[in-house]
Length: 186
Image 1 (cartoon, rainbow, N blue to C red):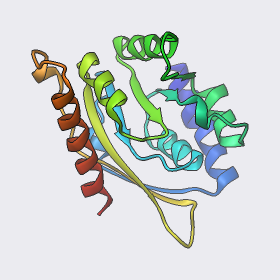
Image 2 (cartoon, helix red, strand yellow):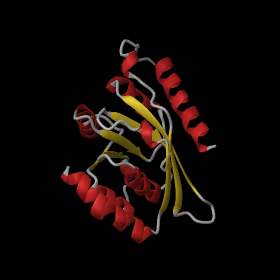
Image 3 (cartoon, helix red, strand yellow):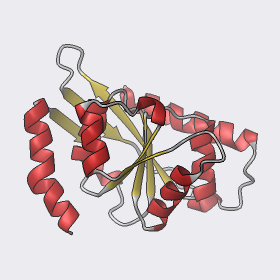
Image 4 (cartoon, rainbow, N blue to C red):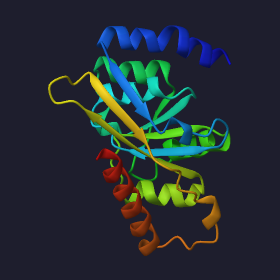
């Protein structure tokens, strides 16, 4: 409750003012207010990640690739205010993956940054069994602070809990989510 109040009254207005963001959101009704969800889509840059944070009323847990964690202001804001953790793809460091599973166990909303949908993320989603919410984020060419966010229908993985986790199913899930995001961009 305190987080939501702080986000609505302080953080989101500050982000919008500082970056002069104009955010349009469609498909917001697809975001469950209680269930654990993984948002998969494209966050092409840190500004669009902040726009996604501003568009969603729930707390977002950010799993960030160490390769993109730079000392830019948007990334610092995400790290300081939004509970980010590094998702190191190299084993044996599984700290980030354990943090991601804990966030989902709490019923959290998890977003991977950058939003590259790859086999590792598809495997994570299959193993978590959580619903996936495809999201397309676009910026206007002449005004990069004008951002459109479109959420698609939820892809329900909980119905497929008996699915065997193999390369074929991982590829199939990855392809379905990529196709969903591309359709949402149009």
